Length: 303
Image (tube, rainbow, N blue to C red; front, side):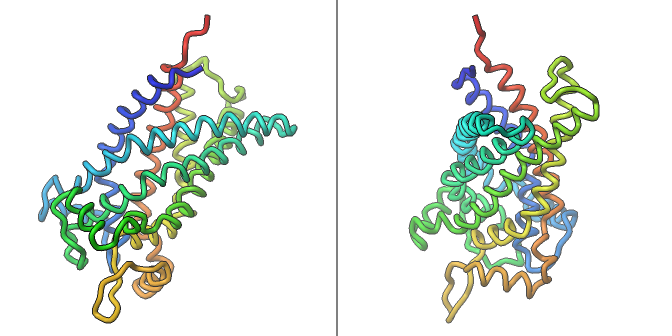
């Protein structure tokens, strides 16, 4: 029932706008995660503003935006197809509507995250390395821009360099998305039931958007808390190098975990939780309300 070209064109434009607004928060999160000591968001923000100016909050943004459009298109396509197919199969198996919806949303979140990471991981590697430039606590490579970073990574690490942390990215984002969509559907059903209205009640558009926003923020909180340690390890794998026998080489997962334990114990795995929670909540709230709005806009007129 969707006009897919309209759906994806509008979606790419709106989600690009969301990415622009939230990008500085992602920069703060990334710098906190790779920092060898705990530094508050306020101190990092002041340091970036003083040393790098406004541009410091948007390092790597061009690269990130370039990857957002194909990654989002692949994500949304996989999401819609999987949700529809799994939902129909769940109903045929005799599951209740609530369970079938949660299963369909969870499966859709899982498969769409795996699909989008094929595009997103190389973009993540390049953009995150640009984000941390200017952090004086890191002995990281220097890049002029995204294209320069691409060439240097390709020269030093080959194509494998662009897929650093791909496995752990799947282990982070696939469960995170599955958990998010399952939590979202359950939270939305729960809220509607408290208002004694059926799930998907659409008569009042404002109420519907409010319920979607609260459900999205709730789901983001659950997802961020559970998957934060994996996200921190992933970020370090993609950004930092290890040194062995005087030579720099890609950091392994075990080296990343050991360095975190040495720097601050298990608590170090939660560096950047605040910005990630805020970013996920705001992004998800805007995404889900926009996503539902887009589906209404892109629905084909039925004769």
